[in-house]
Length: 403
Image (cartoon, rainbow, N blue to C red; front, side):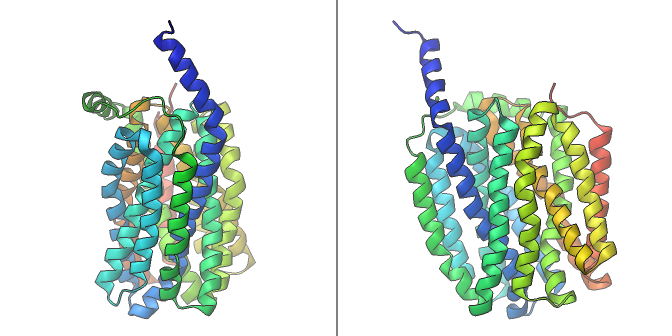
């Protein structure tokens, strides 16, 4: 008779055989998800104008969105780990809900409604990462940095296409119409993800609650993981400030069109598309720390240069450099955290990573809004650079990489 080890080997072989389809589908789905996420930041200045909002109000809206998504990370992580044999359903539903909530956002007529529905969009987005990245971390344990970084590359593709599509559509359509029609591709993508991944072989069913709680307890006893959470939070705080106010700066201070804004943001993303798998592979071979420290330092410098240069061709070059270092960082930090934990809590660890972003980044755009109102929008780049610099010092002065 075949023993348990024989069945485990057969299961592992089945998973390995399906890995290309899994990786391709998740990268493509992640790209489409980020088309919606990135497009929102191009639409945001139009929402600001349409509803008559101040910079402080825009910052508050961004802060509420971040907090809403962060608070959802814990239930999202639990569901992704507990129901990991149903990960395709989780991914499909979250994608469809993104479209439903964006449709509702396109029909708002008050600031409160805009906050409510834009936050629901972020909550739906939140459920993608734990299920997708947790599955990749388990299925690609031998090439974890590459797989998670390639998944991030899909996000960068979406972040490049989203601003271009939104900027082009806003030339002919109102921001309300652009948001309303997004329901169609979102629902179709959800159905496609479910159809492609519903038969993916999963080696285990639901995780038992007692085993899950024991693994959860062990997470908070790891000092290295706590340090990684703090580093991730600092990086995300600076990133949130840049993402929120860069579109406002380009539209209002530089006086450029929505289409040019889309091109600017897409440029940064295109550079990030190539840098993510490269840095992920390098981190697999040489260690996470060797790659992450220079990346964080480069992000800090790029934010500072945005403040110093302010406009012109060098400003565009700096945006490209920003994309090269900003977008791989989160994927690399996720891989560093995954190296420290057991398979049973991979998705929950992803949730903790994004929750740390909320803890540290929740107030960053709000404070950035007050800085922008008082000193001008350009000043927020210096603010972001200061946060990033403190994060670099923390990452350099502590030990957090797995042995």
